Amino acid sequence: MEKSNFVLEKPGWLRKKVSLNNENIHKVKNLLVDLNLHTVCQSAKCPNIFECFSKKTATFMLLGDKCTRNCAFCSVSSGKPQAPDKNEPFNIAQAVKELSLNYTVLTSVTRDDLEDGGALQFAETVRQIKYLMPETSIECLTPDFNGNIENLNKLLDEKPDVLNHNIETVKRNYKTIRANSDYRRSLDFLQISKNKRPDIITKSGFMLGLGEKKEEIAELLSDLNKVQCDIVTIGQYLCPGKENFPVKKYYSPEEFLEIEQIAHGFNFKFVVSGIFVRSSYQAATAFHAATSGN
Image 1 (cartoon, rainbow, N blue to C red):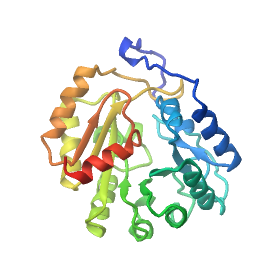
Image 2 (image 1 turned 180 degrees about the vertical axis):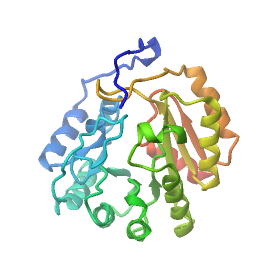
Image 3 (image 1 turned 60 degrees about the horizontal axis):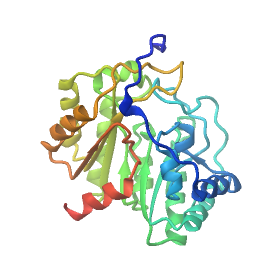
Image 4 (image 1 turned 90 degrees about the horizontal axis):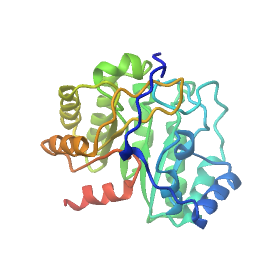
C-alpha cells in the first residue's frame, strides 16, 4: 500500500465549522454506549459526525467494529471480528425509537468470515425496526456479501426502502484501493437488487482525490447508470491516517459542481456532489428527492 509520506496542503475550503455545544450530541453518544452500538460516523472518522449527532441522527454499524477487509482508504479497524451480537438488531431498533428517527441508515463492516456475509443480521435489524417503528424508512448500506445472490435476497425480502452499495472509486483503482473487492461484482450487486425489487431505490457513492482522471469519472457514472442506480453521492477523499492511501488531489467546490453537472447528464433520480458529501449524509433528503420525482 502506498503510504502518506507526502501530504498535500489542505485548502481553505476543507475547513468545516463544528459546534460541540449541543445536548443532542451527548444524548446520541450516551445512547450508543448504553446499547453497546457502533456507528460508521465514529469508526470512519466522518467529518459530518457532530452535525449529524446534533440532529439526533447516526448511521448504525452492524456486526461490530472489526472488518475482515483492509481497504486502503478506510479507517475502520481490520482484524479478527467477534461473533455477531444477537441483541444488536433489537438494540438498534430501540435506539431508532429513542431518537424518534423517521429515516434510518444501517451499514456494517465487511464480514467475509460469516457464511451469509452478515445478511441475516441486516434482515433481522430491518424486521426489528419495522416492528417498533413501522413508519420509519430504512436504508441499508451493505458490503457485497461476496457476490452471493442468496444472501442479498435474504435482505431484499425484508423490503428495505433503499439498497445502498458503494462503488467507492474508479475501476483502475481497485487493485490498490479495494484489493479484496471487485468493480464488476459491485455493479452487478446493484443491478441484481434492481432486478429483484424494481420498486427499491438503489444507491451508490464514490470518492474523488484518489488519482482518478475525468474520463474515468465519466465512465464510472455511465456504468452506474447502466445498472439502473437511482441515487449517486460524490465526495472528497480525506486520508484518515498515515497508514492509509494519500490524497492525490483536493477538488474545489467549482470542480465538484462541474462533476455534478456531468452526472446530471445521465438518468439518475438524484445526484449530490460536494466536498463533505458522504454516502449516508443527509440520506433522507436524497431519498425523498428521488421518490418525489423532483
